[in-house]
Image 1 (cartoon, rainbow, N blue to C red):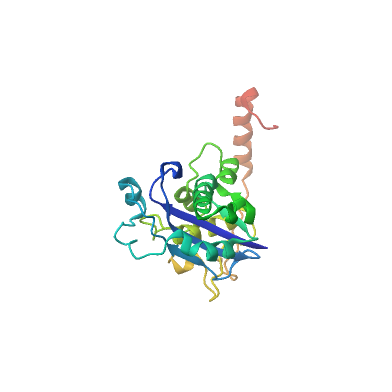
Image 2: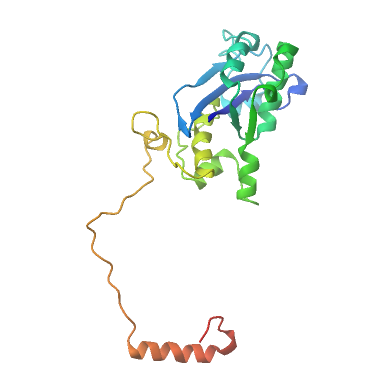
Length: 231
């Protein structure tokens, strides 16, 4: 099964107000393993980036001046995601922006849903962890995924982190094999698995003495009906 973990960065929060995509990051999973076949591009949006958005991702208008426009990359993007299962955190946001860009590029491109199915990991997390914070940083902490390099949001980095979070959320493999024998978290400098020594000393079992058992029974008798386990 081919899955694409996708994230975007944008000039602001609402495509209906003319905001545009400025970065797309995708990582490919095949049979629950990273293939190394990633897609990453910065995009010239032909508009200014909101100050609040720039504080989140750190991408400047000057940096994007010589980058391609969405129309220049749409063919490669659609070819990369076509037929895959997209995995996105807060999918309505990213899919909304992508569909807005596809419409601008021409009706023949259709919508994201024309080319892919979509899994929203935020919806999954809210069902698994109701009432808790379920943003990407919170999920990284919960599943012990090392996000120490995430000082700012970045589409490719966030897609890589979400891929590892998704594997934890769905069971099975709990570390991403990057093809060189190291997991994503190991590369980031965090070791999560501690193997017990095979020749470790057996645990000592200490039985309660008769006096201790008698004292325990006396306490239970005093507790009476407050005791919730069989006497």
